[in-house]
Length: 314
Length: 281
Image (cartoon, rainbow over all chains, first blue to last red; front, side, top):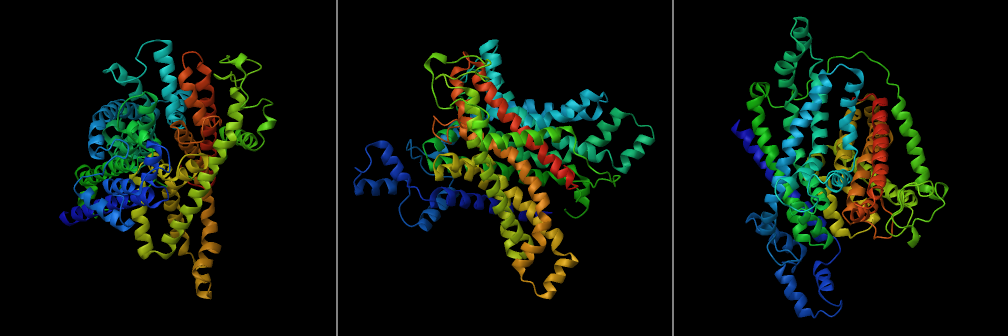
């Protein structure tokens, strides 16, 4: 048990290192000179003197060979230093930390909506027997997944803010302004949960033990609650990491649509101004979130599923 | 594997594509027409501004209404299809080719190549596709082709995983081993005898990925990383409508409906293809 946990931790660190290397390769090794972009934005192009360029390079750790830059960046990352934003000149880690609470609130609100909604739809699709309603419940998740998130956000804005005047449209003013972004962000996640859980319920309910219980006269609801759901909910756990990643990616679009401050907006602005240090910071944040969540769920599996505890790990 | 209990043996029934798949196929063919011959579907110019016709509601003359410069939104949607669908097609082709190559090598040669791919796939799963695409766009610069490449590269992982699985499934078959014994080279064997069997599932996945690539391309375009403004790219079209939501509901609503319809149709097609392959969706 302890050795397997150790190896799992080593694997998590390996993936984090690979995520750093990949994002470094994409952002720093490709042609395109960040300092050149910065100078071109600051004033007339072509007027920068070499000393100024060299000083800027040194300040943003862009001097030296690519390998030296890579080594330096990795060393700084080990000290949780994500570098300096090219636009504001402030540390990226501080900017991320400042933007994180708003995004966390949004993501938490979205999860509060998505989890009950997704589970509810999956259960209802399994239990409901009336044909048209059942078909609607079965197809709703696939339909929701195929709607562009930004468009759903704009539709909600149009309907509830501009037409009905129920909720504020833009910005971040308390709980009321959280409702529409949270719903926008929650819908695709709820659809994902409903799809995975629905598939899992369908496959569990075809197992012999379910047939045995059914033939012994266990009622439909108690069969679902006490026997099927227990087994069917385990795949949901492995979905957590992907779900959180989707929330973060969805926050980019949602925060842009609703003009909210947060990590997503930070990322959008950073890409728009080609601020590579901030972009890498957001990418690493997402990767770390995914790796940590998966590490946690992997360590939790044996507690929830006795079959893994006893047998060899799959 | 314990986590995904095996489905007890189902009666083998042949899947026959139903009405939704047929409708999707018709819509998809129509879309290809839109993308390649936009002139057939509208006689109006997508870039021609008409100051007397700004922000008109949908009518017989302007099916989708007009925008703030008096341009016909239906024409802009039709011409936008060319840009957006070409970008999507490029993205899917990049992902399919790169994924098949990586997955094929990993599955066929195994060993170190397989372990490297495992880490790469894990990393690509760890970084949300949209964020990865945004990072690539940061490096490449903005434009339709750039977002197409970014979306393609960021969805390599799914193809690589499927290709690896398919290659593993076929490489131990007798005919492949026979070819090996006869002296067919590794690469020839992989390309001529193994990959053709993997083509079906890979193409079905490509159809499904087309749907999510349409979404990703339009999202990047909406965020402002696609073609510059006069171009009628779908995401940009919707982003431009943001400022006129009170005065013109049709400006954002109708182009978005087109995108959603395209995604839904290609998704149905992909599902249908996957079931034809005899896979469980």
